[in-house]
Amino acid sequence: MDGLRRASYGRGTQTNPVGETAFRQGGAEGATGPGNSQAKGPQEDGTLESGGRVRRAPTDEVRLSASRKDAQPNLSGLRTEGVANGASFAPSNATPTETVLTDSPGPLKRTPLYELHKELGARLVPFAGYEMPVQYPTGILAEHAQTRTAAGLFDVSHMGQVRLTARPGQNAAKALETLVPGDITGLQPGQQRYTQFTNEQGGILDDLMVTSTGDHLLLVINAACKDDDLAHLQKHLSATCEVEPTFSRGLLALQGPLASQALARLAPAVATMKFMTGTFVTIDGASCYVTRSGYTGGDGYEISTPADKTEVIARKLLAQPEVKPIGLGARDSLRLEAGLCLYGHDIDTTTTPIEAVLLWSVGKERRAQGGFPGASIIQKQIAEGAKRRRVGLLPEGKAIARDGAEIVIGGKTVGKVTSGGFGPTLGRAVAMGYVEKAHSANGTKVELTVRGKPVPAEIVPMPFVKHAYYRG
Image (cartoon, rainbow, N blue to C red; front, side, top):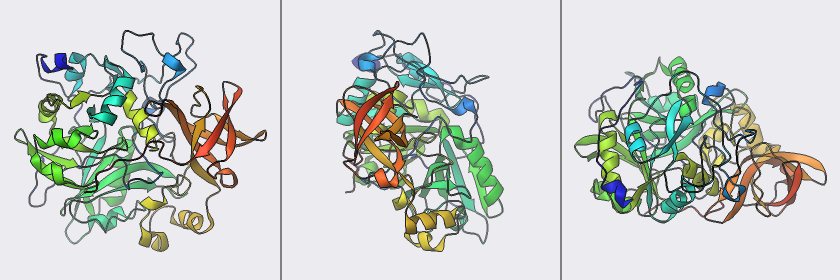
């Protein structure tokens, strides 16, 4: 990485801006909020960023495929679940890995850091319609360890950012609560919350982060879902709110135990922020909005930046001795260790927040009052219990159970795996999936069907790696 800091720094490019608006703090204006991350803290639950979802077209679906005949096994035979093609757990000159995925028709979009990614030697792959870095030359294992022990910088500018402003006489928080089960009206200025858009069956259309600035609500939504989510918001909230997409803004995730000291050199106010809070800061003359949140289960921040300042800010962060660039491959292995959901795999339109063990994200008053799509179904599941439940799984040996692998007890299929991969911090395979409620107790012995063969496994609590959110 020393070579990185000596590199000749040029300007990046931004293509396909959509609905960018001015970034203002005062008056009736606000900012988009970063943070499609995990909301509540050290529960066993989790969520967030996906390249795919059930109701999305195949071009937005990103999952690894074992069907490629020319694919060679990864080192240790391991690969991550939600990562696009070219992912490797080793340096880029190592043996090619088993890889991925759906091709995106038409030109891929680029984030403001595209040129920087190329300069740093990133392996760029299609992800949710964007050309994104899956890894850098050091490989996923090194990037994963960097984020767990120091600080890693992720480009998540493909995520969707939206600002909601109440029209005269209206209340944006109350309006948004008609679409989500979270307690939005209870947000104080500078507080952030995780919630979901639900459908009439209680299924999850998308999960999102919501931050209040006092005057506005700042939303971050999944990349593959953002166009449909925007249409959903405009259809249902346009009468009560101004719905402003700011999709061309940059979004950086600085994650790891040393993230605070690195970012504080550029914006001292962030040092005292607590988990799931947000504030406006100025970095290199640019007005940014920072939340202390992330998708790794550890401490960190997400930084919403003007498009034309994103690369400058990224380079300043990478110049800090604690920070190195991290790709989507390590992002996936980090979130899996933390027990955080991947949309399109662990949650989708057919799963409810209760089945996904996300009850904590449903506001306490809202559990009784309802008033959101699918409320009656979710309320019934709260009262009576859901028929299935998301659980953690520890397979024996080196076999990796992938999305779709059957979970079997006594020859009977009782569920399926939704995410699985190698947990570098643990040095072993981990997975999560859904099983029938009667078989969901921790300590239950099961078998996972991997390549047609049974692999012994045990249902265990999540997270696999203890969360390390900063609460002051």
